[in-house]
Image (cartoon, rainbow, N blue to C red; front, side, top):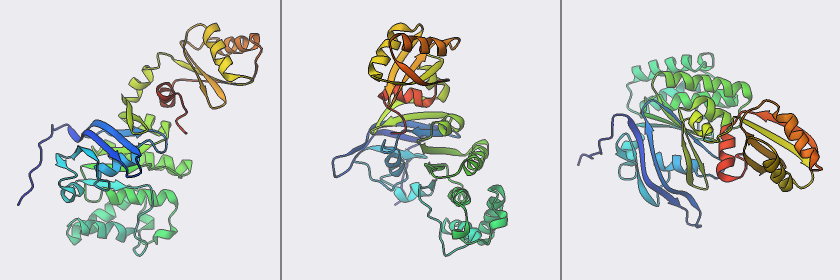
Length: 323
């Protein structure tokens, strides 16, 4: 019997309806998630470790069975038709899954053959991708000889070898050095420019801000906010964030700054600092310093920055994104 699939809007590549995952130990990893991912965009799932990002990706890529709700990739119900769904997705997990018994070129070639490419097509694609991913000079290298950044680029190349409709990346730059991270960002921008749809999980706010067309901020399995990075940052209502370190009762300092400063939108106690979101930046540092000193606090450090996605997360949850 031939499977039939729902017809999606031409712009919608991924859709979830009340998607939920509760593990046997009672942990609600994902709760009632509704999402739509558009064709050709880089969509980021941003949140701390344990937020539910990996579980969401697992359900969309058939590795995790939802407790309830539905999920579609390219119009295919991933629970009802997992084999068909695997044909239209590419997955780059957190761990290195390259075949160590094969060299760099063979990892690509045999992946293509597994997805029913002819020998000639697989050979040509493997060679082309190694050029694109700056790995041509490593084509006969053994996997264990690759650096972390090279191995990650090879896993991305392998994941798109069969030209999937959607590429899933789970914490793609975790553990990479800054140079390798920038090199991978460049590759992802190239794929985006070619029209590749990408869904990526990350807990790096800079990565989400620089790469993603839209970002979903999640925590404890719940969707907290969704929009472009610029839209999300505009929800702060402030254009400057001052971080204050001081000796003494920081909760009392937070209350004092909220009371004494002009243009304050919000004050949060985060770890061992107080973060003040204000409108305008002119003269804000001396104003904060003087307000703290007049209340008897000894300021040990002051810094100023523009609102970030981490600021949005703190406003939503009252905690640091890195927790």
